[in-house]
Amino acid sequence: MTKLWGGRFTKPTNKLVEEYTSSINFDQKLAKQDIQGSLAHVDMLGKCGIISQNEVSDIKKGLSIIEEKIEKGEVVFSVADEDIHMNIEKLLIEEIGPVGGKLHTGRSRNDQVATDMHLYMREKTELMVELVEQVQSALLQQAEQHVETILPGYTHLQRAQPISFGHHLLAYFWMFERDKERLQDSLKRINWSPLGAAALAGTPYSIDREMTAEALGFESVYPNSLDAVSDRDFILEFLSISSIMITHISRLSEELILWSSQEFNFIELDDAFCTGSSIMPQKKNPDVPELLRGKTGRIYGNLMGLLTLLKGLPLAYNKDMQEDKEGMFDTAETLEGALSLLAPMLESMEVNVGQMRNAVKEDYSNATDIADYLAIKGMPFRQAHEVIGQIVLYGIQNEKYLLDLTIEEYQQFSDLFEEDIFEKLAPEQVVAARNSQGGTGFKQVYKQIQLAKQHM
Image (cartoon, rainbow, N blue to C red; front, top):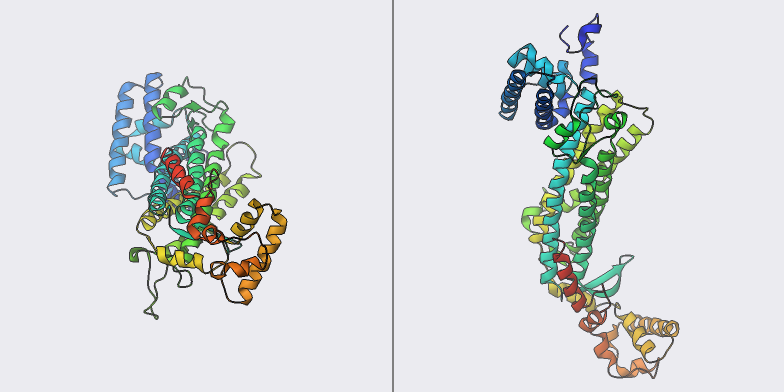
């Protein structure tokens, strides 16, 4: 038999079964982590006297040769050898002889694959933290430049109140800050070592799990061998965090798409992040934010796929769990690409300050400030709200905005109006007046920027 597990079998595996059950086409991405875990494992076997130091040396030398060949693209992985673990072990035996078979002493593919995925998730999670900080830096850089740039703030996609553009961008900074904190917190659960749990019940060999955990940079070991080989919570957590983060990316992308349209014309994305039309030469399409928005579905799908996969599995390992990897790889690669594009796209974005300012002049988004004006002068706010509604209706009927009305027109609705109403309605004053903690007032936005810098 050519299979490393073939001693019990009397027939070769059906070729269709080999192709259907093989995972090497995708889990070869774990080659680096598999060798890393094997090096820690073989060192431990030698230290514990389970194999000789000469055997340790031969195995480590063989693994190094295989790693170098893989990096150079000189290895052709075999479907017949099923997965990355069996492929590497087979290559090792071919390289150094039967002693290569001693590498698998005291472990199983079940704890081996779990270890590989913990190592992969840690690497990707740490990378995501770095990439999120680059996006935050880009947002912070633009926010600093546009604290006093005014644009309409929206609710229900209807103009609501004037706000600082810097304040608007910082809202996304704090969304990504929460994403970053979730990623950092998840490392506590990623950094558990399953190595040494073997197939499900541990091993009769006197192994040292703490030694391999320390060698691999894990903070602790799973206290239960069944849990160690069947746990995929750490992947679910990553997919969940990624789903929340891609939601934030998608919301920001939607605004970039709207703002860059001719109808808004608030921003212009750099040509390097847009494409043209094959038939309409005037077009400049925001394809990158559109794709960022579109990638949301596949990341959600990967989360739902793994949740569904795990929901009915008994302990411990089941072949179904081979399906845990492709979604993990896809989400990590999709999110890495999204964050890598988002940061430079934000950095190079041009802001049409004048267009934003003109938009604030041509609406009724300062209406709330008239209500506040009357309330400060003693009118109950609910009554003031009704008065301002009547003034807005008057303005619409007469094709006038609030700053276009005369003092006499205001006084038709209340004798509490005085000349200072026009100062109160100026967009800069409207924004500056919202000086409560966390508000859009310029002083508060400058404070917010300083706070944001403390999180970088």
